Amino acid sequence: MRFISRLPAMGLSLAVAAGLSASASAQQGQPPLSAEESDPRVLGWMIGSPPPADKIITQPDSVYFSFPRLRWSVCHLREFLPTEEISRGLGAPVPLSYLTPDELTQYAEEIDALTFTPMNSDGLMTWKDSLGANYTDGMLIMHKGRVVYEKYSGCLTEDGKHAAMSMTKSLTGLLAQILVTEGTLDETKRVIDIIPEIKGSAFATATVREVMDMTTGVKYSENYADPNADIWVYSRAASPLPKPEGYKGPNGYWEYLQQVQPDGRHGDEFHYKTINSDMLGWIITRVTGKEVTQLASERLWSKMGAEQAAYQTVDGKGVPFAGGGLTASLRDLGRLGQLMLDEGVINGRRLFPAEVAQRIRQGGDPSKFAGFPTIPNGSYTSQWWVFHNDHGAYAARGVHGQTIYVDPTAEMVLVRFASFPTAANGRIDPTSLPAYQAVAEYLMAKD
Image (cartoon, rainbow, N blue to C red; front, side):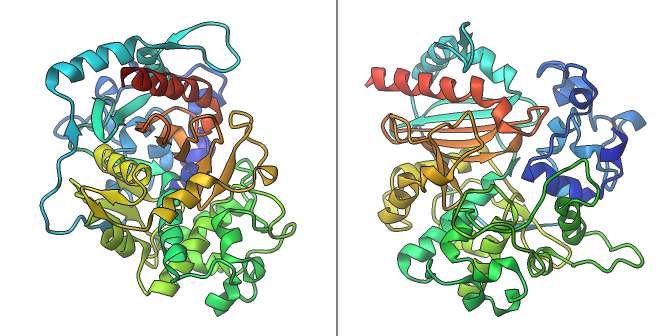
């Protein structure tokens, strides 16, 4: 995949988080290695003192985010890119509540044996088989606040961290919704009224809510085959590496946002464009005087009993990538999901008003949502995906299979880290969303 290997390092990371498929074998028409065959330990990436030359994954050689290297790199982003910490603070972590060891074994056996029918299929699949089919690196299921299932594979270990990809957007959106609910941020204001520097951009006349719900009319193409597409201009701007001699483009996320042109009318339709998330990150920073990493630490990580600090990649000016730069642990994202399910309360402590989670669960306008056939009745609001199914489920989602899936009816939180060969979740949903429903129904039947 020579085109991919020439891309700047931050550019590829940004593109992957925004939706680029990084599978060389898939692009060449060959079936990718299976989850077992592509396991980083099986392939021997970065093992040895030193590793063999053909097993070293480096930066700025951007093939580090191509499959199967991807399966190692998603647990090691900090070795490729500069980051900022989302501190968990100085207090002791609050352990998650677990079933007894015997109960965990029983639940694991029963859940692994569950069967479901994938979308557009007549055959059955087991839950256990779906984990391999989706290149799952980590799976955590919580029911009524207790862990009932936990597995690690691929590059991920119990004490490790994994790239969250575009689930970062949902963290950014959650922070924004907290500020809106508390009255710190006015969602009806135009962006220019908060950030005057944006006056020459199409974002200037959008409202904060339109940015939060990605219904802005802004020009931003993600045609990865076109080296002049907007995604690559954005990537070059965001790269933390020194700009090449003669470079005259924008430097950093925020400079890029100042030159975005209009495309359509604000408020008309949902268009999934990562630049909305970075615009929202700028808005949050301006109204609070704090970077999104600092705010995430103060409002969430340092108060929810997190086990580990998280971190977020930054551009050349130190601005956190609000649209896709988060790396965190499986259990801590379980805590975040539980916090959403329990409407702002965790460990007996309220971290934000219940209205925050209620507003996100309510969803956006389904009439503005189209183009996602695996989510036919869905909507998008505050950077969260809402399914409008019988269980009222909603989710944070990231490419290559990342998800925090919240099912209020089943009182279930499910967190998955994965390194699926191709980026689009539409390829994984047929064997994921029905599986989640099957587990939810199983847990409800256990009550």
